[in-house]
Amino acid sequence: MTIRPMNRGQRLALLLMLTLLAAAGAWSVARFVSPSPPRTLTLSTGTADGAYHQFGLKYQAILKESGVSLVLAPSSGSVENLKRLGDGSASVGFVQGGLGLLALDPLKGASDTNLRSLATVAFEPVWIFSRKLDLSSGLSALVGKRIAVGAADSGNYTVATSLLATYGVLNAKGAPVATLPGNSSGQSSGATQLILEGGMAAAAKLQTGQADAVILVAAPQAQAVALLLQDATVELASLRHVEGLARRFPYFQVVSLKRGSIDPQRNLPLKDIAMIATTANLVAPEDLHPALAYLLLDAARQIHSRPSLVSRAGDFPSPQGTDFPLAQEAERYFKNGRPFLQRYLPFWLANFVERLILVLVPLVAVLVPVFKFLPSLLDWRQQNKLFRHYGELKFLEGDMSSRVFSADETKAAFAQLVRMERDIIANKFALDFSDRVFTLRQHVDYVREKLEAQANSGMGAVTTAVTTPRTVAPDPTR
Image (cartoon, rainbow, N blue to C red; front, side, top):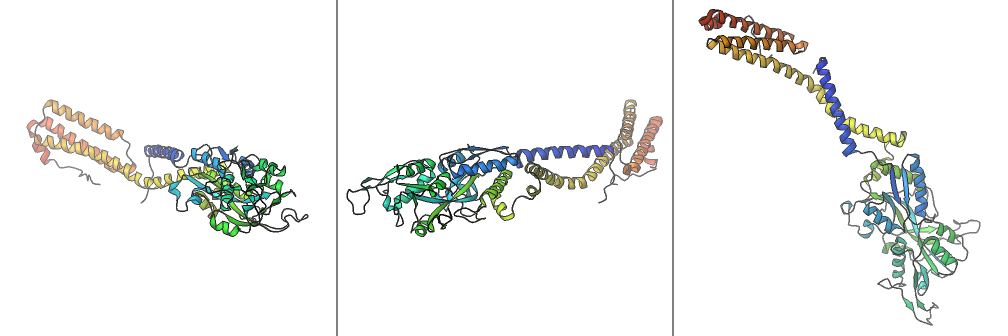
């Protein structure tokens, strides 16, 4: 279809339509489809001396470079982080493996929770330090001992008490088991004591002799772990049952602390240490803005892709073994990497362009058929004006041919023809309609002549209407 040039009125109408469509599209996208990401996020971390908080400081520095303020909210651990994510007081948080929905019930799905894992970001080994106790055969030797297991209701406490119950240090109800005086195992008498402290406080109690053992669930970067690994007065347990424990508790994985990895010069540790580990999950509500999800994932890759004492370079971040359904943004990130525009543009500029594209694509999809349809619509409107005047003429001529008008009716008919002619002149028709406009004006003159003839001849008006030939025969369908 050939699109002919539009006149000034048509161009103004089109410009107005485009402006309204653009404004409506931009408002709809900004309000409902892709609102601008918030500039502030709250990250629920962990204790101030723990690995989670140290990770949080690194996230904070990276997001600051992109103009996003990350507020760190220390907590007692993963359990409190989950509560904050659930009530909306945190935008994102670290959650220890084994506490999430899929770890508790693998049959659950995305519809059962509004939380999503962005990735697993680190191994969190179960570090079991003691004051030279032989724990190679298991944790039964801890019966009757003082054991630091972390703060009550923390993720550390949950894992520690589960392990102690598995080895009979705690009974089925989670209560400490007492030993009998003079038992043959050489264990001290009395009930096992659980010390509800973790992190540096628990490490200090072990070093000062106020605790016999400490169970820490933490990344190797945690201050308490680093401190105790360098302390020659305490020993890190290497369990024989790690494979069995990993099968008994699906959220555990087997890791190994290699000989000499802590201090090769001092040959620490003296042998490979077999350990079990959970994974740390980076978790957010499903309504987290997609642009911020990608930003957090990119920060996670910068922070967690380096090797550690129990992981190789590139092991993390990972989409595997998450405790919550994987976020859609994470699926795309691990498959295709960062969004195209974020690879080449600053974060906020990339986000603006992405949102602009969301406006322009549907707008173009609407405008293409509009451009094709608009000329036909404008033609139809102008044809409709012509046909309306032809209808008036036909009615007036028919009425005039069937009877003789009175003086008042004749005057009114002349006035109607004058009004019609002025209306035709006032309407700015396109050049394509010039021949039809001139023809319509000829027909107005033709009817005026018939009206004058009837007014002058009186009763001969009917005869004149029948015998007078038309000089032009218009085609209304043209």
